[in-house]
Amino acid sequence: MVTRGVLAAFVFAAVGAIRAEPVGPGIAWTRVYSADVLPDACGWGTSKGAETRSELTPDGLHIVDGGTRTTQLHCFSRSWSARAERGGAAQATLRLISCTGRSGMCLHVSDGTHEDSVTFYPDRIRLAGSDLEYAMDTTDTFHTYLIRFAGINIEVWVDGKLAIDGWGSFIKPAHNGRRTVMFGSISSAATGEAYWKDVRFASAIVAAEQVEGANNVIIYRREGVYACFPNLKVLPDGRWITSFGTRSRRSHIDNTGGSARYVSNDEGLTWARSSELLPDPRMVREDGTAINPHARGWVYVDEAELPAIRERGRRWMSVRKGTVAYLGDPRVRFRHPDGTTSRVLELPCPAPAGVMSFHQSCSFLRLGKVWLTAIYGSESPKGRSGVWGIRSEDDGETWDVVQIAAPRSIGLGFNETAVCANGQGEMVAMMRPKDGAMNTFQCFSSDGGKTWGPPEDTGAWGYPSHVLLLRDGRLLWSRGYRRDAMGVRALVSADGGHTWDLKNEIIVRADGTGNGGDNGYPISAQKTDGDVFTLYYINDNENVTHVAGTHWPLPGTK
Figure (cartoon, rainbow, N blue to C red):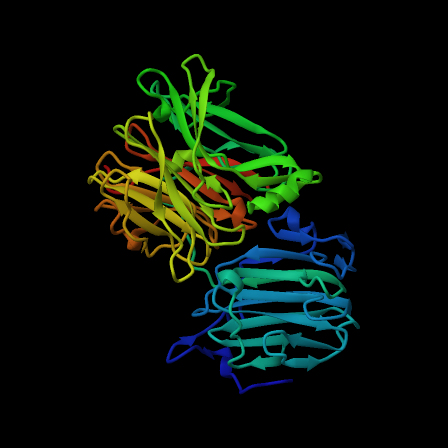
């Protein structure tokens, strides 16, 4: 055994006087994968490169990584809620066949502050962050490896015995603040092969109970369909309409598969398929003209145009074989009451790399004759992003682009932004930080969105956001929650969003699974009886990403 000090009863001392006790011997596992189905069929994210493969066998999940070029790796990942101050644990039972280098076959843990991984070599195991090793034969039979950590300390146990004592060694910063368990090959350069019989983890999470009186409804769920990004329109006649993507691939960029539209006549209790295409009533003037200020967003083109896209400095992504997408410019589309397009007004792009729109159910605001849609983009394809507003102050006759928030000098950028009137003469913008480990930021405007104050930390984590002005004058902030327990959470403000009731967070859903990116994008509406309906998409235990909603009573309204 390699040690750095003796840890009595597996109690870790964190930085300073803080003592952090991770999950003990009687571990209550948060998730268990038993190799009876493929991991990506039960909520694990996956990265599968060329010249790699995985399959189920009687000996467990067989992972083979034979590639050594960029992106040639094969691993599975899952988000969790591990924290440095309370620790966590991950365990795997496997038999190694081969491993040629660091992370060629490994078990990785990260807690949002630090991260490390155990690489399984044929003749030893090694902690990547400290290079502490333990000599053993990992190929002779199946062995059980347990990583336990808290604070800046980490231990590795093999078959119930302490093998590596990493006192003070859990110090490598977590990449982008991630909180993840990963297993398999996470190295492009190294190769590896192993049979994995069992992988489990415990993040020491506090149970998250859904708000009392909640009623969940499924709007659209189909196996093999990635249903995502629902919007919500509340029509003057009382109907509610949602449309969303029905993608054939689990992708945020490849829109193959189309979309669907559903309508509810009872404020979200039941839903039926609809073919009726209607504009958002908030975007229709009294003369019947529909006006849509938006960023063009992803523009899909043949990959032959890629050299020109790069020359322009636009952000781009590969969509599918032969197709790429790049970010377009801001514009305003006008439609006559008969549905024909009268004109499209192209606006100067404030971000050289192009701009994106967030859901207009969240990012659009009309307040009297002032119209505003929040957009975001960056100066370079990999640069920090800022937020702007496509704005009109004469009921849509003329338009300009105003800055809401620039990337901060500390290196923090902002992207998806929800806007709302706060009922106190101000507009509030809730901004998702580019660094996913940061809290949501907000800023205010007191002149109809023409100028904005500095970004302020809300003190709460979670994204993307939707903000609703309730009938009693309070603000309701709904947001995706992409940590364990994943789902949707909400907060209420009684002072126009300047402070939020952080001690009384409302848990709308807490049973999402899989990668965090398959959960969230909530939109809330207040019902006639004062209750709230929150629409979102979520991934379930069968790894089906679907569109659903929750009816829930709002505290303090009855």
